[in-house]
Figure 1 (tube, rainbow, N blue to C red):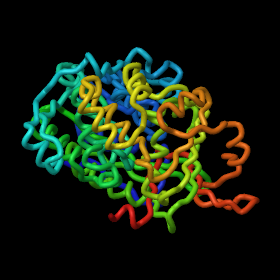
Figure 2: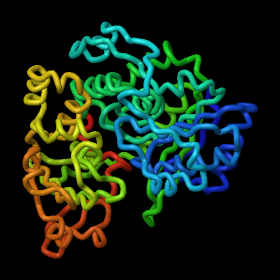
Figure 3: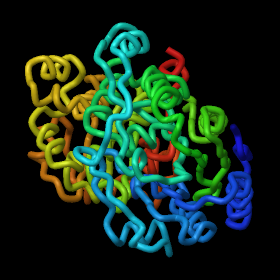
Figure 4: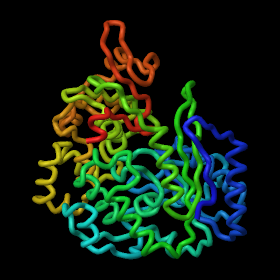
Length: 424
């Protein structure tokens, strides 16, 4: 059922309109006594989910008993991140999702279905795993909050990804990511329907339909002054609210460049991007816009690690972003990668497959570390002097010496492509 639907590419919700919309949604749902909120973590700071969670707490008061950020494989939020993102929501309400230990399997999708949706590329079973708090917490309202935006693993982020990946377990996350990687990232990004989404939809229908889950989905973009705005807000308990949000996101967050980009410069906010696990959005989201032989320069002052999980960081350092053939061969030959298919998928996603060069300019990793995983290295100070984020505007720029660069101030907010690659 769809409880709320409003938005357009040029619309901008005010704080008062957002609060009124939430009051309308919650009023339709009736009185609730034990509420669990599932917002994203700090890596989705720009989603407005923190503001929505705070308004939800103001509405429900003591009935909001638990806030479980949907970390997936990300590092737990710090106290300062919680305060910045969620405002006055009491710190005592927050729980930490442990993706390796704190989950239960609510059902298993047969291998025949995985084989069907992956076009025969994979034939393993898939466990639908969720945090124990969802399955056994006794809540009469589970509020899944998030932003719909183009995504490299599933096509469009959020909806039931927030449940089965955001609060999922190691096997479910690993196998879902690998489905997307093997199927082909460029066939998935920007599309509401994908093999991974089909798997999650199957799980929602067969294994969690009894849970009182309501989805609140935002669509966010910058206005002409660079300020973030909520362009759309959709709420419901089924695919329809996601479908509507995905349609607006594709219209709002997707940019079809007029010509293939020969040099791109991407800025990674140091508070948001500390690992290549997240920072490789600079690769995922631009790859369909880049010309063959293009240069991608990533300005990453906060970069200090490869994976946010110690084991995944070790695997990335060991195997590197070597491309699909070498990664698939490594999976065949090494049990540790077969046990961490999500890491293997990430290694595939983060490779240019030799089609363009990726130069990382890190704040805290060394040249040796960057080059060991098959990226190029350049000095952050030197590159910032040449490609100054304070002077570049999003999109095409012509420098004083005539060089043309395509600048992106936050790769997490969109998807860029040239028509030939997006439609192929």
